[in-house]
Amino acid sequence: MSEYAAGKEVAILGLGTMGGGMAANLLKAGFPLTVYNRTAAKAQALVNGGARLAPTPADAARGASIVISMLADDHASREVWLGRNGALAAVAQGTILIESSTVSPAWIAELAEQAAQRDVEFLDAPVTGSRMQAATGQLSFLVGGSERALATATPVLQAMSKEILHMGPVGSGAKLKLINNFLCGVQIASLAEGLAWIERSGLDREKALAFLKTGAGGSPVIAAISARMVSQIYGVNFLLRLMAKDLRYAETEAARCDIELTTAETARKLFEVAVARGFGEEDMASVIEPLRNR
Ligand code: NAP
Image (cartoon, rainbow, N blue to C red; front, side):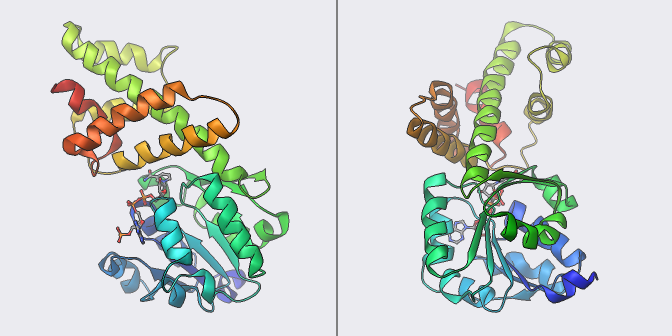
């Protein structure tokens, strides 16, 4: 264990696809770790590995130097930070709060304000990378907040990541994250339509995809997601309903800058159709299924 890790109590709130992997890497790096999850059973492997399971967010946050949350959306984040037995009321002065969920910049501003009223530092630090990168400590953090808070939090973030990009003041990370997922979501929606079209057109699917993936219209996300669409193996890397959420937040945030995200709206509708057809709890690649089975 490094000298730094020995002295820093870390709490992580939310042990889903991403939070579970992040917590495991914090344990591996030697940080004394407390975990909280609404569904406590998901903490078992971490507890076996040495984490302390807290019954409430407040209990997890009490005594921690750094509190990280990795939750579904604005609603979940509000519940865990400010709800009954919420974490914020329990943090001590000098604690650093890190919101890593993909949430709206409007909610980040509100949460940061609440943190300031308690005289604690706050960073928004959403991530790129998915289940695999969370499990292997290869995430990228997009950070908004003070240099000083980030410098203190850096060893903790490093245990979970390959890259830490400081974008500017609080909210900057959340904004860039929505732009990133806007670009991914629109590509995945277009890919769903393009691949469904290939399948109906009589073209050789493998040949067509091999060409498209490496052509001008190809991209890392097209390569990764087309493989899942073809295999129809939808074990969750990224829940489909979370992409609909990200596109909704992106549309709202862009509108604040007077930009109408017409392509995000079109893509979101495709994801929402898939949610309505029962694919919300599957991987986002299953967005193609309603197009295959009209
Ligand atoms: P997930 O597996 O669905 O986990 C969501 C977490 O939020 C779980 O711990 C869940 O608790 C908790 N939660 C949901 N609603 C809650 C509520 N009302 N009160 C308290 N806790 C609540 O999602 P994930 O894939 O880990 O994603 C977490 C965040 O990272 C999301 O904002 C997502 O958009 C973002 N993200 C995901 C990926 C990815 O590839 N998966 C990549 C980058 C960023 P339970 O276990 O009790 O349900």
